Length: 350
Image 1 (cartoon, rainbow, N blue to C red):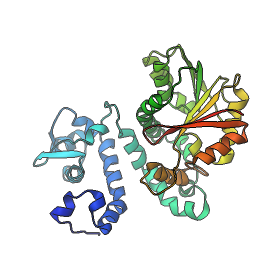
Image 2 (cartoon, rainbow, N blue to C red; image 1 turned 45 degrees about the vertical axis):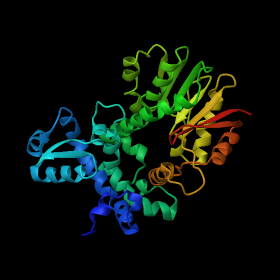
Image 3 (cartoon, rainbow, N blue to C red; image 1 turned 180 degrees about the vertical axis):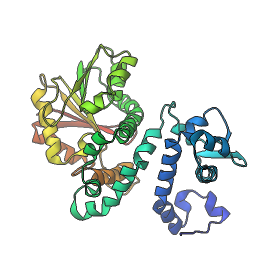
Image 4 (cartoon, rainbow, N blue to C red; image 1 turned 180 degrees about the horizontal axis):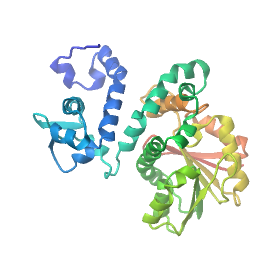
């Protein structure tokens, strides 16, 4: 049991003003929050509260939960802005909790379900193995890699794909704000998941045609969103394995794909693009670019997720992206940094 004493002053102080031991305590106990968010999302509590305040008793009845235990989770999350206890044992969504609803743009619900999923949570216990060996801790713990796990566990896979769509909802706007696609007439998104990024690019560029390519179990969920967006006639959905072949296209884009693989794997993917490319187009890599220095940077923590989850996966520096492109006969033309953590690395034929 870990305890800590906080005075009223330290309780209201910004995190960086807390004494170092308390700053560390918040970091060390962060999994408590992750698992609590997973539980309330799994039980659908944020969606039950979208119309207003409800008692913990009513929420327990609706979710089949043990009321006293659910109350304690809600109380804890109310202390950090996820919920608000309006009166004794009656809760409403707090400023953060609004973004755990299914129907809110910018939702992080699926990310909470993915990061808190038992398989993923357990996988992180392999980080020590990953650091000692350079091999995936997830694979060490589960006996199979994360992508094979997705194929077997539909719920886990859906949470992952949903989380990637949630990231795309944030990142697509940043990409479109920073990069002008107007001169591109055809673009293929390789490993494009459920097609959210491609859909947003096509909406802003009405003369463009698109392709979304991914594994079969992923693109089962791709055609319908494109149809709802009115883009089915402008965007083909193609099943494929990007290590073996990609559909022919004039230009290619990938988002958060290269960071899943070691350099050898990335070169294989890029080689497939080069081989299938029609004419001399562009390869656009949408990923984080690790910057030097000690400034707070989420990509440096994301890099640990890649270290543990994927054999050889990592976030890269600009020079490392340049080397990947050079290995397949492309030149790093420029890096377009968005106002967020994602950048567009533009490669052209050397």
